[in-house]
Image (cartoon, rainbow over all chains, first blue to last red; front, top):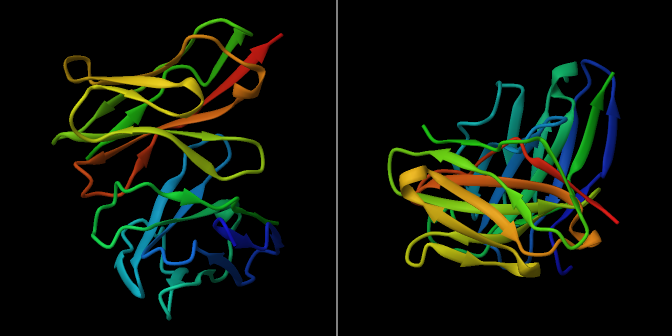
Length: 117
Length: 113
């Protein structure tokens, strides 16, 4: 596709369930980012991949959060044993850069809205 | 650590009036600065960015921003608001491009006919 796509667009989970959120970046984009956007807040960085390598995961809030990008393209963000505070929009972004230039233009997907009951 | 403050969570302007959205940052090294716009149910879209060079940066849709180091500011302006400008605007900073983007809390712009 022409842009970054994410699925599902909406996810409702019961507290304690595991969820998996998918991101399809723009074809050929080397870098991929995950952000968490709570209601009324700006996006907060979670993790960053360059190809299949996870170079920075300093923003992951707990060990219940795990991200992977095994083939350097599609990425999955997994949240285990979901809690109510995990309710947020999860944004994925990709950029073309082949360097660790985190300021390169990032193209964002529409996000997945996760609601934990 | 870098941070961003956006003054005013909600700004309302009349159609045709000047748009001014304020952004102040803190950074221990020369900052890279960004403005993104978010329309309902859509992802963020880059409006403009400052990395080095000219301090007045022009972006898409008639927006521009000026980097003022002495004021640690990067305010976003547009001379004449259009109804289609109604959206959420986010300012973001990176330490010389070597750190992930840090976003402000956003400013919702409403345009009144």
